[in-house]
Length: 146
Image (cartoon, rainbow, N blue to C red; front, side, top):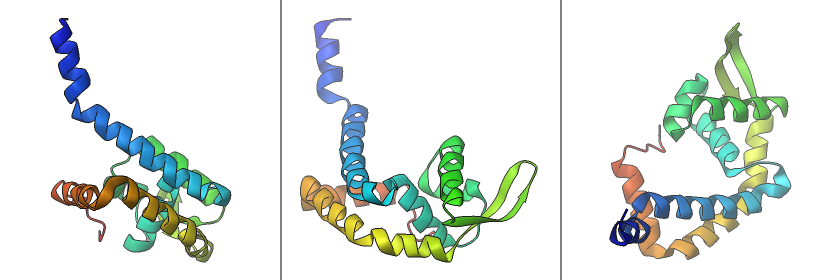
């Protein structure tokens, strides 16, 4: 591999830049939510479930573009805390999950810290970056109103 090839990848790779931005934002939100015992991924699962209502775990994975194992691991933690419940299940696991009152209360309790992290993220990205992220996600079919 020539130096110019290395320089091109190091200098231009959009994937690495997107991952760096993602890690920085995730760290910011996770730090803000740490005192609640939740990660931003788990808060987004709770919020998505609250938005769509009772649904199969696979639907949450589709909405948030998460691997099945990630959804399963996080839902099991949320289930253990009583923030969600399996409204139907079988030998293969949870067929449908629903947000509980405790889960709704948990969302409400994290809101001040989430808002703080949201302001920090917006400051980090700047208004142009915020609009770019929202526009890119929208054009890729991310549907927060799912």
